[in-house]
Length: 67
Length: 464
Image 1 (cartoon, each protein chain N blue to C red):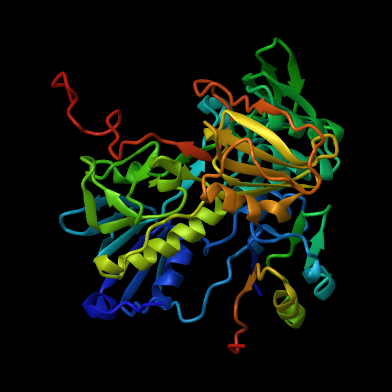
Image 2: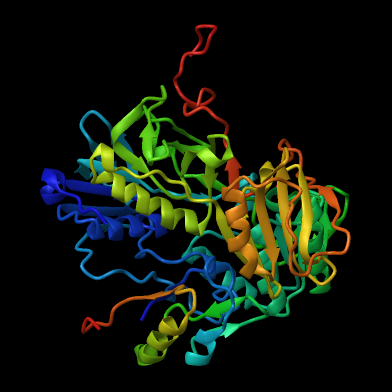
């Protein structure tokens, strides 16, 4: 799957790191590093991470079945 | 959101030249706005639109594969893609774009989103050495990544702008010895001024970068196999290096518009606040729009000066406005009023900015302290607030954005959390614009929509 984070918006709340620790990592207080193309199996975690983001900075593509 | 209607929306033809962030977001916005006609995207790279910021960060350190930064696409885009073929010409009268393979594409509306490319090393023979690399696209990153994983004795980064600094940061994360040269007094001097740049210099040195400011590279020398092995600096010293990354800013991709009659040149494609492109006489066109790095447009908040913004958020926001205006009637058009915003991650520090720091003469720390590397710096121009820069304090930027949008007085009149005991207003110390330095990423390109120096506008003496 494909992810992009609007890092202007991101304020390092780290909610995504809790929801999807294999995809999102904080390096320092504000430096969010993420896997732009995680395996499809990570999708449920990414969906939760995007929903949990207080500033709604995470955007991802739809799954092949449209979900 | 008002939906586009009429014949154009139903079966018109929109052509987007440039298939990166701005091109993709414009295509998505067009569909969202109700455009149901034919949509074509032309891109010079063979890849689908991908995100560039990770290339100098998590891709370079190897955390993420270079091929995996493809941008998510909205469903139902229903676009025709012409990838791997650059556009080479525009015929305005015929409303037609010519591609490098000879194909011709007609349009009812055209969006120019051809962006920028890395400024090459000025000496072509030296630039051709193996190990001399510029970083702009995915393929560049793969090349650089190969060099970095071959255990180089030392990496040289020429130019300490944001890209150069981020590359140096990635090299240090990989444990590689790195030297950074910068002609200005500090890193990031063109973007933030040398006063704040001095903090970036301290951070680089704390992380083991051999930072050399006020120094230029005069020559790159190769071995018998044509691989770079040595750099000569203008202070007389030499460096043994196995990689030289040229990070000297960007050049705008406008050459394909030569002879089109548009107001396009090395500074970008001039357009109005609604993204409509000007012709070379300053007359606004009806069917041609521009967005992203390649565009320069007047900003009402900053004296209507034409700004060219090489920022991620600019590509996103301007593409959205351009798309809207392309398929709506005049009375429904929207202005592009986005305040410039960007971020850079380096050496574990998040640097963020809103506004236009390079307009400012003065800067004051309003929160935190530069010693702790956590602070907010506020920038002032002739008594008004024009920009704010944060180091690991991004959460405050929304407040400062509001100050900038309201042209709040400078020095600031408000109290803040973590305010320094006696804030001192300092000069910003931007380098002399004549000094060849790294790219500031916000380029002030003057007030004129025409490009007298570069286009066919007759000069006063009757010369062309």
